[in-house]
Image 1 (cartoon, protein in one colour):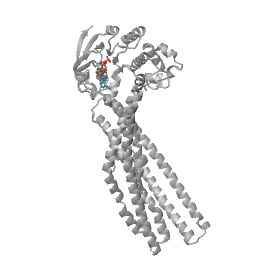
Image 2 (tube, protein in one colour):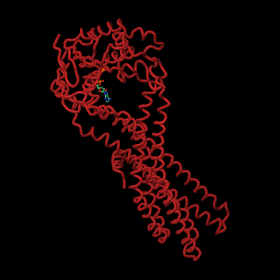
Image 3 (tube, helix red, strand yellow):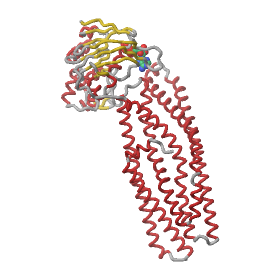
Image 4 (cartoon, protein in one colour):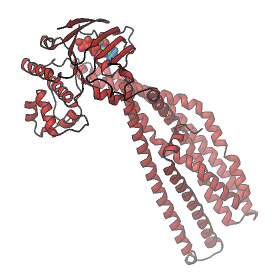
Length: 549
Ligand SMILES: Nc1ncnc2c1ncn2[C@@H]1O[C@H](COP(=O)(O)OP(=O)(O)OP(=O)(O)O)[C@@H](O)[C@H]1O
């Protein structure tokens, strides 16, 4: 019944969980003591006719017990919140590392988005709902059973008999709920994917006045998701209702027996009242287990998806051994094939070629023949469907991402602009002195742009900040590459979108940057071709080397 990830929680957060269990024990102990005091006050004031003044010190003790319990509950909540946050942070970091280690399939980003946001956040319920219920079941129920057994054996026996009904009913509901919960997650993934696509293409849809037409698709996705969620909620409601009914009936049954036995003087008022006060607390974890059970179905589905996503990484035999690699290395491609998911024909098939070290190699070919695809495979963003890519004698896809990042720099056709300062956009969370940033901007022909900025390197770029033209964005990408200082540099159309003067300047920068590096450029521009030591013409599925110039 207990999900496997809980074992991991028990191992990782052993001390915190022990503390939480002790706090739980203290809470239930204080509650039982408070109820004992309350029963005895009621007994002394109403039945034994003592005055309130006589009961006042005992009332103070009652107040103190409630106060102490509140403090422990508050601390317990805080620990649970903190541990949940830490646990989710760790998982997000793991997932982040995984996306770097495991070359992503091109269609994976919406899936990763769902995993990193919704799925991981769902695991908060493990700490806010599941673990507290589990602790109450493990600590409160046996503790109160013992208190019942010490006070009145018959009540303890009835409680014990009614106890297994709830788990049995939950077991019956489990298979049905799991299927519906899986379905709801599937609909959520489709919804995320649909919205992701819609947002990416919104400007284009607006231009072609198709934004309204897409509303129908979005509405359908929302409808499907809400229907699937409603199905899950129906079952959750049913489970809670059944448990409420059973526990209420059990409490009523025990209350009647206690009442009858008090009438027959088999039980004193103080003991009977004390037992009646404790009964709701005894059944509380059982009532909560309905909600917890529904939550567990949901979190189990998310945890399974996260586990599957992370499993491939653990299986991969990655190594960081690149110290022995000659720098800059030559690139050798052998029998490389790549097919995009949901496509029947490969973009690249049995491609073999050599990119020499310390030279500029220019990749040409008609539009759509696979130049960008080849560069992204070399950058390790996608994994090849077949064949090998070697950096000297080392296989690229067995290399650790840290090694790959150190070795290979990549300038995509449209570099991404992050919402952040110019400095953050340049350094991408690395450290470097401001002078180096300014020097890189100068080399990438962005000096004038930099001087026009009101706050220099601290100027905010991206959404809500300074916007950049396509040409400026490309040069910003080039400045990033200059700062990264990688021995292998891959550039996709570095001069597209630039005017003639900027193009000349960038070509000069490229020739400077190429010194002591292995450079592969995808381009048609005659000026870039003039730079080439070697030209490779990529036609559909094959490559022809135009030889060394
Ligand atoms: N994410 C993707 N999913 C499916 N197919 C894709 C994807 N990206 C590219 N393709 C297809 O792969 C083929 C090669 O595309 P690629 O962008 O690599 O060509 P290219 O030679 O770089 O073109 P260009 O010179 O116009 O940039 C094209 O037919 C394209 O439609």
